[in-house]
Amino acid sequence: MRAGAGAFDHRCLSVSDHGDNHDAQRQSVWLNNSIHIAGIGGTFMAGLALIAREAGFEVSGCDQAIYPPMSDLLASQGIAAEEGYEPGFLDSGKAPDLFVIGNALSRGNPLVEAILNQRLAYTSGAQWLRETLIPQKRVLAIAGTHGKTTASSICAFLLHACGLEPGFLIGGVPGNFDVSARLGAGDWFVIEADEYDTAFFDKRSKFLHYRPDVLMIGNLEFDHADIFDSIADIEKQFQYLLRSVPANGTVVINADQPGLSDLLARGCWSQVIRYSCTDAPADWRAVALQPDCRRFDVYCENHHVATVEWPLMGQHNLQNAIGAIAASHTAGAKPEDACAALAEFRSPKRRLERVNPESSIALFDDFAHHPTAVRETLKSLRSCDSQGKVIAVLEPRSNTMKQGFHRPELAQALSLADVAIVRRHDDLNWDPEELTRLKDGDKIMVCNSNTQIVDAVCGVVEAGDRVVMMSNGSFDGLRDLLAAQLN
Image 1 (spheres, rainbow, N blue to C red):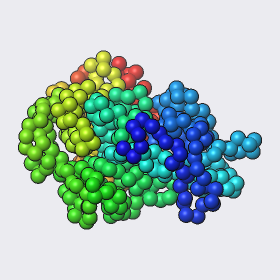
Image 2 (spheres, helix red, strand yellow; image 1 turned 45 degrees about the vertical axis):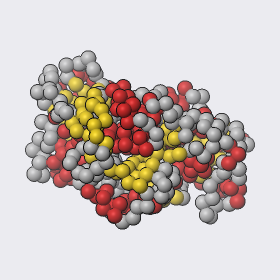
Image 3 (spheres, one colour; image 1 turned 60 degrees about the vertical axis):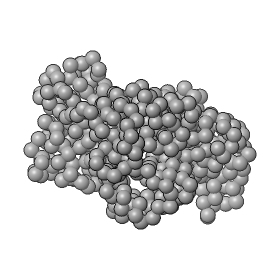
Image 4 (tube, helix red, strand yellow; image 1 turned 135 degrees about the vertical axis):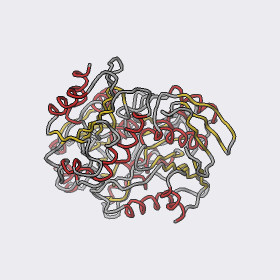
């Protein structure tokens, strides 16, 4: 460990230098210094707030709007979070020692402009972690286009179950912990490593700040069309990430994703461990024993380790599990203990989350917002024993979805449902009606409101059916509306 286990050394903490910032931003950050987190309502920044508070900092924050569960979580930890970005509090002499600025804020934001005009110290969330926490921990980072939250949750849970007392920062609400982030008393820190940009003043991917000792990459596809022009742009960021893993570190890679092997071929200087759920050459392998993948065998170098029974379903979750077993083993978890612990793992919120367990019509809430994730979610529901219909309800809310990328792939993914309903929004750069005219679009209908969606679902649903809502947003409260009707 880079410092004594459980001992958080504030003496080594310093604010980052952004190159063109003033010398004041290179000041030391000491115990009980105050930080104000702008954009605190997001899962990453809220998690950062929890860690800072646990480490002894005085923490406050603001966001345009703050919703549960993050608002409740912050309040439970005594962290004051205000709505809005008005900088008036700076005039009363209440400026914090440091502002931590989220990537949702840009030039023109009133608080950002006030910080710049008054030459106040600021940094990004990712850089704050790098300068404060990461020097004292060993980092296990989980990257990829899909599945990061689930895989990160599994890794953190397995290390916890094996007695390693990890810290973690997860971009969701894990099912086995009461918080999304924790400092941790042990050597290891598990972090969901996002490829999205860092801040308005730092357009590098956030994960380039994390300096992982162990890096797990599950997949790589085009996404985030608002900041990346092509898959090549994203691959470049992942190449930089691979370069940051030391030679005595480890890269844990999904052998079932050919593109990742191509990525490694462009340059990797670390030990590589491969995992697979197929016949691809790999060090670790999971073999499903039933169609829904809730029971599977684990092999390490062709030696049987354990048979696992766990509550998650689907091939994509099987990949998350075997990857997390491999990564946690690299961090010191015993494979047999890790496999046994999976029986107690609970999925993060909104990852195929069953909303109404008592109803004869199953309603699921899922975060899928990419055709691949939509496909895997629907395949998982198809793998269940139920003979009922699968009804998919999709909100195209991500920036990539809003711009209309992947339309043929999206129609193909939705064709796995018996009925697919797509919500039309005014801010879309395309008309979802186009999906109905594509080769695989004959099962798709388009609705203009949640009221129409509820009526459409209730018009076709029967006992034994499975309904899944898919969005990376709130879906304007559809979850509660549908649950009330289906119950």
